[in-house]
Amino acid sequence: MFGSGTLRRVASELERLGASRALVLSTPGRADLADRVVAVLGEAVVGTFAGAVMHTPVEVTEEALSRARAVSADSIVSVGGGSTTGLGKALAVRTGLPHVVLPTTYSGSEVTSMLGETTEGEKVTRRAPEILPDVVIYDVDLTLTLPWPVTLTSGINAMAHAVEALYADDRTARTEQQATDAITAITSGLHDLHRDADSTDARSDLLYGAYLAGTCLGGVEMGLHHKLCHTLGGSFALPHAPTHTVVLPYVMAFNQPAADAAMATTAKALGVDDAPSGLQALVASWGGPTSLGDLGFRTSDVPRAAELTTKRPFANPREVRHDDLVALLVSATDGTRIGANR
Ligand code: NAD
Image (cartoon, rainbow, N blue to C red; front, side, top):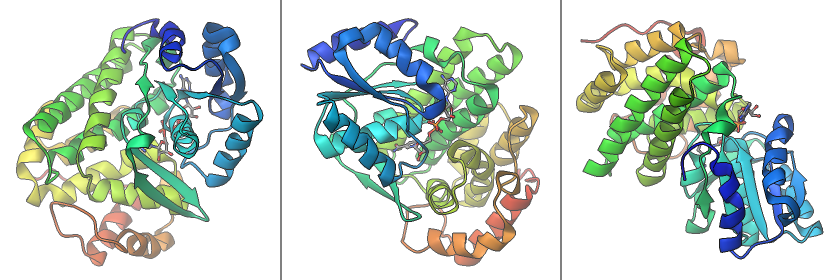
């Protein structure tokens, strides 16, 4: 469900699912979002848990699970970004409870049946139909408070799903169209919002683009970019969306020789001549992060990150050797400017 004010539909959706005792989840800083859901649901809420954090650590899930049991919750409502949705998925898959998501970032997690969980410093992803949330309500009003830096990096996180979908081996005409539309909508949303911070239309474009990108993420196999960001987030505690934002142009440049058509489509949707350098320049012009070093990653971490990433095979249009990855990570850590390749 899309639109403005769609939050109120959470009540009828829970009723339709036969639920009347919801546990509402949020991140620690956004309990206000949970309050807005509670205001709509009233007595249909039996508890709140404002402890969701990035990369779904299992200890937090255990804590939330105890809370769900203590209040005899019969449903989960997640309001927030991918961290909250991840916690909701982790609870839903463990309990079988119905799960309603109100996304407020552009992570796309709400439309995938994937869940990445972190245990003892390693993030492991699994896929199961029960992980896919039952209902997603996109209410643009809930996204109006998202600060520009988070908006930008979350938008590029969504764009990454679409970019990798364009060169996925298992792509279809439909996913190619969704990916192209996603990149177009996200680019236009970011341009417009950068010009006018109060534009609800720009926010709507971003949310729609994020939904399309999320369906790409859930529908086709992702490549090097997602594999690498997964390692950097899970094992080096780097922030999810900013990491995607820095890494994406470097992976695009690396894959470009083996993914010409995908990069040409991406460039057109971005409105630039060359996709990797064009995206990096756009991110810089919007004030976004362009180096992993600025996110706390050190050159001394590069060998271990390369080793962890290449430990298991993954899909990618171009073969990735350990040395390639080391070179890519060194450039990304330094924030080396990517040259145009035309
Ligand atoms: P996030 O959920 O941590 O949100 C980022 C920040 O934005 C937080 O500080 C949050 O409080 C704030 N925020 C959210 N909504 C807000 C609002 N309306 N106003 C103001 N601030 C707001 O980060 P994210 O990037 O959305 O999600 C990252 C997590 O999602 C990671 O753990 C990642 O692995 C996971 N993820 C999973 C999938 C999947 O398919 N399984 C897909 C994408 C991301």
